[in-house]
Image 1 (cartoon, rainbow, N blue to C red):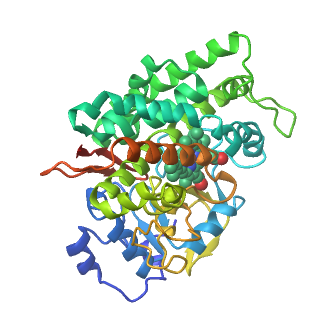
Image 2 (image 1 turned 90 degrees about the vertical axis):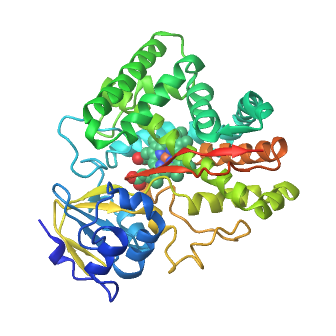
Image 3 (image 1 turned 30 degrees about the horizontal axis):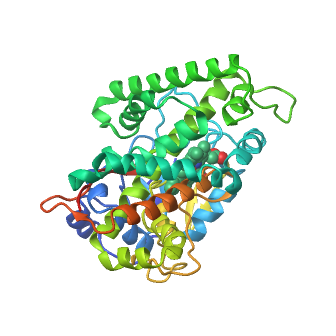
Length: 415
Ligand code: HEM
């Protein structure tokens, strides 16, 4: 197993003492994505790593490498033979936790699932869901517009993505969604000190979705994605996927669909609340919204980084990586690498040819990206029509949490 001392590629930059004074710890040789300082200095830490330490080291548990530069991230994410997903995306993964397909498997198993899922989430399939998404956005806005204020996450951005996926794609009853969303939220973002409660929430999600999938498998087929998942796939070797694998696909989709889109939606609306000139530009030129959405996706990345297990000795930007090492591909940093994006910290909604890796790279690239884009565009269009002028409630500021995902939990607005 490698240690921080094997990390030979530190470039001239702040000393360990300077880093500790600024970020609470040495983020090059002793990084921890669960350290609250990472939440508080999120972009500054990524930028410091991009500038001086392309492969940072964490010593938490068995340890992991933290790879930030765009070219390294792209190479790792594309080379699934050297950097496998089959042992999970989370470092120090507790034993006995079921693997979630398609995220936690490699080709050809992975390919069989992507072939099944992709057509249901194609640009055309998602365009067909757009009218429903607009209706949902307006239904939610109707509930609070008369008050002249709202808490954006609990009343809006935490709900739109759940409705778009559970209700509109899967047909889950709206009444069950709040419970599901709350359990998922705690399972993903609850404090590490409450790991038992986190595990219980996760179990409840599995049980609910298991019952839902079973019920759907007993009903006449509707020809939708849920039918496809319940039926499962045939792998290249002729074997059929198991029921548990099928269920894990539904859980993976649900996990991927919700908190991610909420963070981009909340951050975009926060940006417009604090940059009225950008809100005005989009109100007057709604044709710029798709491009603005792409920039928001680049600069507000909900997936901070996901992991791979190294299958053979190799090297990344001068650092020796040994078979068995765990490597985090930091998509959030790669999207703000100054080597590929000019002035990357600036949120420029008129930016052309936006390069980002927020949806991932390679075979595991987000299967739900078209659904996310469609919702974000429909949301901003409807929001700006209904609530043209809005700002952050005086005396409040948004509340975030960060680990391998970044989330916004609270944003109070007045209008
Ligand atoms: C702005 C919103 C979203 C962002 C930023 C995002 C980001 C990502 C990223 C970075 C990956 C790549 C994982 C890797 O390389 O290991 C991924 C995979 C995935 N996403 Fe998303 N996602 C979003 C929305 C969605 C939605 C709406 C869905 C469901 C409809 C979804 C379902 C998934 C699934 C199932 C995977 C695993 C794909 C695979 O392993 O082949 N995501 N997502």
